[in-house]
Image 1 (cartoon, rainbow, N blue to C red):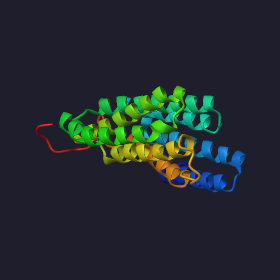
Image 2: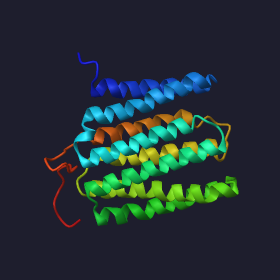
Image 3: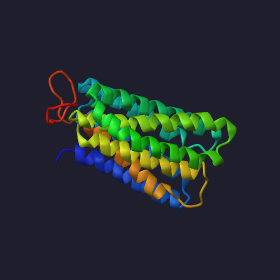
Image 4: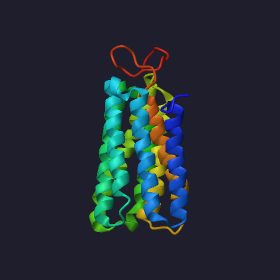
Length: 231
């Protein structure tokens, strides 16, 4: 039995995530930080093992995963400065994911269809968060909402050109997980939203990491066989 395998690396992320949630609930901050970095290192290792270095799409996804790791490390801190650093790292991660999906190819029709409801949801999220934002956070948070929304839209666009379902699942799960972060760090709810948000986040990253292995052709393009036609 191979010690390093796709299944084992995905299990490492899952165990790290569940440990992180349990330790946070128990108020064990230092072990929780360690569990977080283990889980986040796991999704980078998973992408490399899946063949992420072998295609342009995979390398850009890996860049996004690495930036996410930096964001995770920054959000261990509780100060506003660390929050802004983490927000910036995740914003750049989403830019990397957008670039990867563009590399995969976009369907203009799917982008248009996905764009309308996602834009409405993004506007609703912005309206929800606005009353809780300090003046110095308004622009960064609004910019982040725009970028993560574009990431989800381009994921659907890539799916419309035959890309794997994994990227849509990953993008949508990431968006939902960020609502948990917003509720916890900006709205400052007493409800431990990370109980749902953290599993969604790591599920998203595992899907994006695994997407680097799906249906690479000899030119390094990322494609799932899909129907031809007007896209």
